[in-house]
Image (cartoon, rainbow, N blue to C red; front, side, top):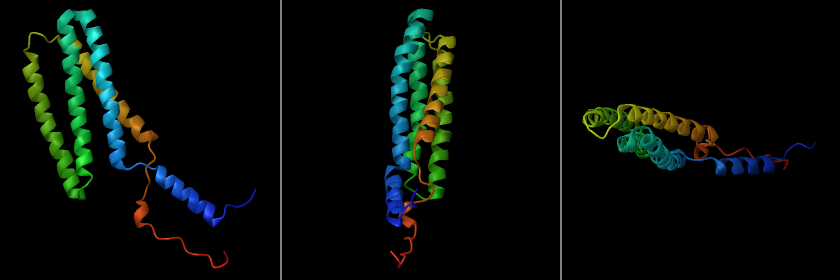
Length: 164
């Protein structure tokens, strides 16, 4: 077996770096899959909720799916927005959105708690499935994404070998 030449190694590095995804592309992929999860939860959760608790079960499952997906999407959108700024601004945006999301989530739950169309068991189970689903989506997308450990634009050029 022959040793790879400098050109073949450089070509392999170029191919790898061009297939690596940026953080924005990864988060966009997460948003896309989260949207698909929302559709699946509304259809399947709504059907199961309807079969278990009638119309109230249907609306409970739909409400829980919408709440979970919107709040998960807020995190991803804040990451896409924050990644364009400095590290301090990044953390301020992400943590600020997390705090606002937490307060809004509590308010939404307090408002929905007293609604006559909410079946608490169906709502809770759909919410749990949605949250686990979004966590699984995050993990799978990140594990399958090729992310460079260093920014390719700031690496020094390889030294030129005078013998080649």
